[in-house]
Length: 43
Image (cartoon, rainbow, N blue to C red; front, side, top):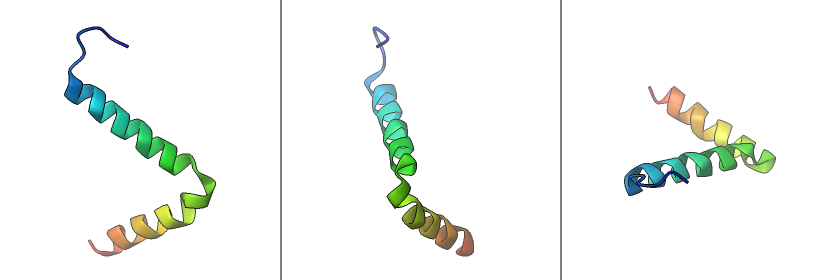
């Protein structure tokens, strides 16, 4: 850990790591693609 790190930066980094962990789960891939597909189609 970096000393004196901003708590908000730490929280954002944790959220990014959580998102990467979600994407890395093979059984979540179909759900992720479905959500991304719907989001793209909604534009």
